[in-house]
Length: 334
Image (cartoon, rainbow, N blue to C red; front, top):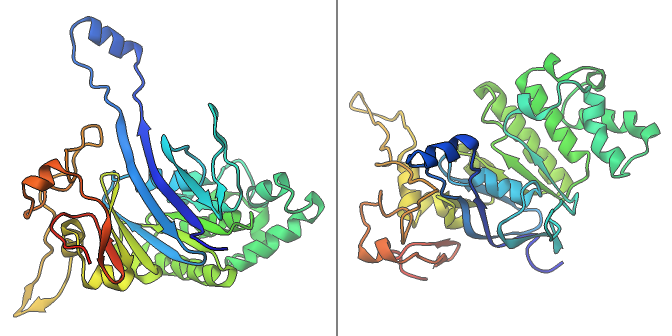
């Protein structure tokens, strides 16, 4: 097929507040109740080629997980469109529903994403049986095959999630997602809750399966080293917007946007020079609230290079190099 396999076109997501009885009482008594909508994702466009791994990086609260859930078909966008292989992810209408099984998701916390009342056999087989990918009579062999592919003993099918370690549970979650035979996989910080010693095993498993099954992957993480290791391209997200995107080598070696530069500079290092430890450089200031994002470039409140144009005009994402694009007024267009 021509064109990107995952196409995200000007997608936004807003969460409107719920007004409780307590809020009504507070308002009646003259209290101030802040009920502004949360703008979690703001006009994001992305294109991911078939078989590509796109890493998505940003601070907590920038909208990464919200974007991931929209691509996976869990949340409907407020505006914009998402397509997987040319097929809409969500149905249109008042009550949108997921339309495709071509994309599946691996969540961050394997302790919360697996039903503790179900055996592994039921967890992995439930989706394929419902969508008629496998007959119920063949489900046991089907589950055993997928458990073997993720490095678990087939006997694990008879056990419950609480009988496994965190790394083993995440392998079960990966098996559950891949048992649906997806063409695209959304991984939302899949190793963040695991011990460091286990993270490399799960990452290598994901990479091996991605190559074996020719999967298109959106890989979300706050760990810059992990993202560089697994990704072909990297997108940097700040307060609901993509501020830079390019090949992994280009983004890490020649970062264009001041926010990308600040993120890379904030990574702690243990380089010893004259018996002194070189410490990291944290980003100054706090991430603005998504309920009231600043005008212009959302990063201008923390950017040491910001000018008057940055404070009033929102920059567009444009090509700034052979293999990358950035949304910054200060970076010349290539």
